[in-house]
Image (tube, rainbow, N blue to C red):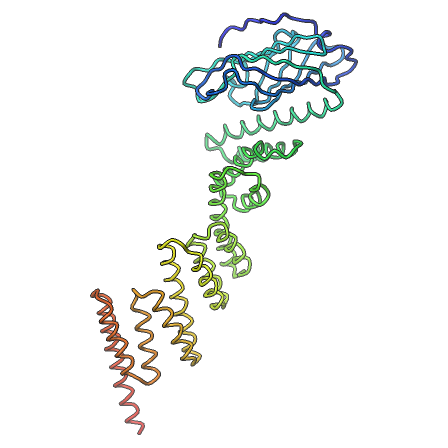
Length: 418
């Protein structure tokens, strides 16, 4: 830490706060000019100017002056002391090196103030930016809302300090201890006036990460519903959404195990709406429809989803899944003696997944069941011409042999009956 040398003369507190009869807050606004910086993240900050607000307060009969300053692009700071030329400054950090060891000197006539801020110097390798020296030029503003502004700035300080404490615990893997602090920090941030989404985002992200680490799916989902609109960063939103999808799928599976099909479907559909390319979400929706006895809805869902698939891999997966659903519905139709409907679904399945022999074999078996071994063998022969891999050809040959054996048995039974 560099030695501090006051360059603004000490003044009497009474000159700073004229006619103070109680602990009213005096409000000053102006600009802060950055004179010296340190740390690695200060590109473009040297010489920069920031709008700043400074609030002063002194208890009656006390020689202690206290206050707080905040502004655009700077972290809120609290200060206090009995010598206006050297007031101790604290920032809302858990790390004492970053929190303390800073000073501010204030001089003025009550209507105008000049304040000089001196912060600890950071080494050049430090991954942060520090304003080693900055000068504020301030004028007295209307004090009507001074008390409210002071309370809001103090709440902001407390929110940032609480989040810093939570982060320190989380960094050590102590998420159970960090969680209530993250929740408190966000509650404090939410209580601040204004609708500053960028200010709230770090609090939301910290709490969300704690919920994720602890597997608190319900809490994460509620947080997501309340606050996702306040996250503007696309990369952060994508991370949030990936966790949201995972937790929705988990909630849906729990409902599915309880046979609460509509609750399961609601969760799976929310997951799918966030990630329409998620094969896991699509499979979950299909499974729910099938288990709840709605195969037609499963097919309709996949047919609509297939229309939106642009990627070849995704389209292939969807086509294979839809083909399998057509096969399942064809089996049901066959069982219900709806042979024509079954054949239509098998033809659709074969066209969607032409690399699988199971649909061709099922169709041949259906043709044989309808009374035509010749038609069945014709289909299987076409399959032998179509499929060149040995495994598929062996399946077709085995299916043809089974159909011939079945046909021979049926003929013997008919002959015996005759």
